[in-house]
Image 1 (cartoon, rainbow, N blue to C red):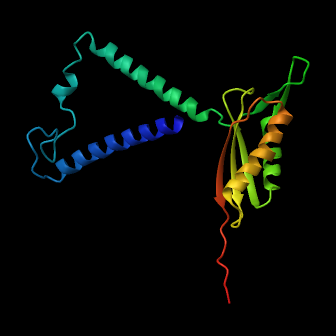
Image 2 (spheres, rainbow, N blue to C red):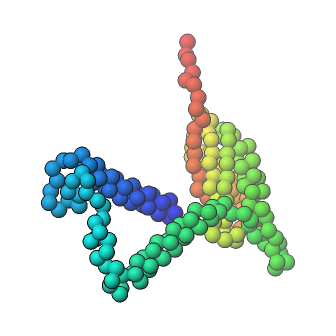
Image 3 (cartoon, one colour):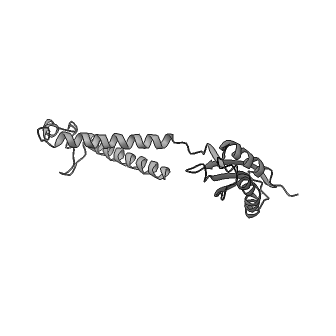
Length: 193
């Protein structure tokens, strides 16, 4: 969701800057402009004195300006905090049987899963990242680097049957939703003589 919001905000900011820059460029070049165009000539100002002073004496003007600016500041702070939020799950709650539970470091579980995934036949490299909203319902993102001769469906089924199942059982989780991305290692073509 955050990626979509970032892309929309970046696209809107780019569109506004492009339109404003284009309008200033067209007016500055002295091209013939339609009557509704905001700038009429090369030495025209962005806001005239009359435009700047028009609403100052109205009673509603300053509260509206302050409210709009406050909303913009709050949205900017929300966006900044969303950027700083950790995407990685720091710990997983393991049922220890005593009702208390134990905390397992997320990096430790990621390392074990990555090590087991790398040991699978035809996998040249693996990286794992635990995500999720709470430490009781983690989700895994796995990136597998496959050898050129490996069938992706076989590698994926071995990953789910071995590495993911072992991690789920060892942590005592009911489920461990996993998103796997597969990449093939670059290789040179073999020469046949």
